[in-house]
Every structure is written in C-alpha cells, then in structure tokens.
Length: 511
View 1 (cartoon, rainbow, N blue to C red):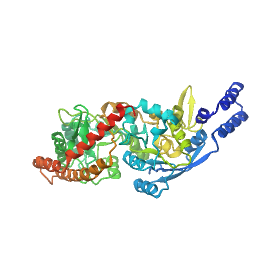
View 2 (view 1 turned 90 degrees about the vertical axis):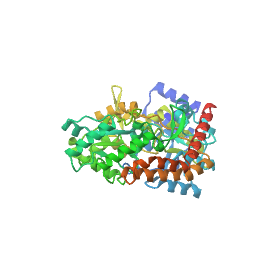
View 3 (view 1 turned 180 degrees about the horizontal axis):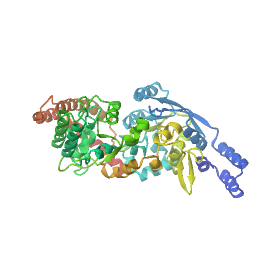
View 4 (view 1 turned 120 degrees about the vertical axis):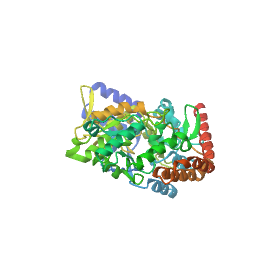
C-alpha cells in the first residue's frame, strides 16, 4: 500500500483499505485501492524543482528514486539541474520572479534573505501541516538552532545524515607504512619525524598531502586547541578569533617547517582535488587530511591495481599540550529546501516535504523500493548486486543525491563500505569537535561581516600564507596580530555574540 497516500486518505478510503486487507489483496483490488487513493488526493501534479547536479553523479531524468516518490505522493518534478555557479542561477531565478515551486538553497543566509523578502514559505507558520517535520525538530534541537532566521522564522528545510559521509579525517597509506615498518604519528613532532623518513625513502615525494589554499589549517586547528576563524569556545562560553592566538602561531610554525623541508608540495596552496589525488595514487604522498570517503573512492581509480593501494584512518595528531585529537566536524550540510511562497500547489508540496521527514519517507529515500533496489532475506535488507558501492547506488538510482531526500539513515550504506571504512566510521565520531553554531544575521550584521569581516579575512590569509612560505619571519607575529585586530576583529566577534544570544533566546522561548 502506498505509505503517504494511505496516511492522508479519508475515513471512507481507510475503511475500504482495511476491508481489502482482511479479504486478501488481489492485484485487481490493489489497483482499485490505488485509484481511490489518487481520487482522494486529487490528480497527479508535476511541479518545478531546481537543484544541484554533482559531477560524480549528474542528474538523470529516469532516476528511479523520483518514480518511487511519485508513487507515494502523486507528485513528480520537472527538474532544473545546475552543475556549476549555483548561486548565480538561483539568484537570477528569484530576481526574475520565476521561482520554481521547490528549490535547493545553498546557504541559510540566502534562504533568510530571500525568505524575508517574501519569496519563500515560513515553515513555522505551517507546522500543523507538517507533523513529521515538527517532531524531527523537537527530537533534534541542534538542527532547529541551525535553521532559524534573525526573526526566529524558518525558510530553510535542513538536510540530515549525508554529512556523515563528508567527515574530515586524517588518513595514511597503511600499505606503505607496513612495508617500511612505520608507526602512524600521534603528535606533530612524530608527524614531522615520520614524514622526514618517508622523504628519505621516496626522495621525489611530498609525504604530507594537503591542498586548496589555507583550508588544511581548518582541520589541523583542533590539534592545537584553536580554530582557523571566529569560533565559539564552549568550555569558556565565549567567542574567539583563532588566527591571533599563540596556538595558531604554533600551527603556522609547523606548516612553515613542513614547507621548508619539502614535506608538503611547494605549490600545495594552488593544488586542487586532482593534484592531491595524484600525489597519493602515485606514491608521492602518504599522509593526508581530507574527507573520510576517499578511503574507498580513491582505490576505484586504480582499477585492477587497486590491491596495491590502501588508505586507513589515522587518529588526528596533537600539536600542543592542550591540543585535542580531533577533526573538525562541520555539522549539518549547508544546503536546504525552500518552497516558493507563490506556488499554486503550496499545501501539497508542504505535505510532500513533511513525508520526507516521516519514518516511511526516510526509509524510501534511503533504500528505494523492495525488489528493485533492495531485497530482504531473513529479515535483513541488502542492496542489489548492481550497486557495488555507494557511488554506484547514487549514479544509477538517484538515491542519496541532492534533491531526492531530506533525511537519510546512513547505517543502510555500511555494507557498501570496505571493512576499513566501516571501522573508521565507528571511530571517527570519537575524534570530532562539537559543531560550531550556524547563526542567522540581520542586514546590519551581514554588512559588518561582508565589509569588516572580509577585510580581516583577506589580510589574515595574505599574512598567514607569507609566514608559511617563509616570505615573512615568524618573529613578526605580534605585529601581525596588532594589525589584524585594528581592522575590526572585535566588531565581528560582537556580531557573532549578538546573533548567538538571539538564537539562544528563540530556542529558550520554544519558537
């Protein structure tokens, strides 16, 4: 029986369905019941949706997941997939007034900005139509704290679950370490020592793989008990700015040491994903800070030679006496659903979204349909053999792609992970920071962040890069701290503090 329609059927329909169950569901009776359900809901509708299209699993019109959702809800979508520059495409659609019924919005700030102008529905005004979503927020107060507007409204339906696949981690080539009888480092001094040894063994290598500007410092920072930006210090209940702290200076000194001695690539700041992957795949890097998923993804690139390559999870190294053996946990994904306020099918769309937060909706979005995407043997579910790993499932069915779910039960995909990945996913939560607050800012606060905040960020990044590359002596650190503070660090800290206090007030009031 169709889950969503069954829940929404009228009493007469429910009576017919119960009678059918008691009498045995023949194919004719099932078809008849389905027709009655459709009549109770009204005709099937096709709505407009704009969403991301990932390069690794680009949107396909014939993905089964959307067929399954249509079977349950009577709603299908004409999808506008966007492969790149989503922000521009999204803003053009909204400014033109041609807003799709449903669209992914790539930040809370964007949802709040456009929602306040009347473009999107405030879900808090429709919680009577969304009991499953209401229950979800009650059970996940940390999620509710991350989806508010400055006025305590909600224009942004959060995605939940998939962020676990994107955990930041330290990884190492365990095959190479075993070959040379090396021990994974637990401190930055040990990291330096083992990297030097690997450099001796592989002279043309850069043992520590990092890439993409200064972004490696984000995940290194917890090991030095600091942060790579503005952050809330939960222990002391105050907002701080990491890049001026003494522990941050210590981290920069290590990076300068790694750079000077050729332990990281000389152009690591300019490296992108491909160069990073190539270093690891070509035995030119052996320790990496990246997403945990590459443990299983990178070997696939090697095909028949995959058996010669192995990555494993490495406990995050510690750099200072008060450092924490943790990776940065970013928390919820930055993307969420917004419903157009002027959609002619607003009420049905709200019920559709609520279905995705229901146990049945989560099950469908996670597993697909029995007999087509999975089978059940002795009470145990198993994905079909067509899907060797998680990427196959996404590419071939659309399951777990952006636009096809709100909540996913990530335990369903554990069987698709390698044994090492399974073990890593169990260990990783014990080595993660508490997620930083995701805050909503007023227009005035956003102006401070965009003007003062960006000025501080630009100066900070320029100076830190010079320290790492040896273009500036670390002896000039105190001068740098004085200069960056003069640019308005305190003003930005006050904005974060104000927004944080406002969010806590809304939560305490039970909004």
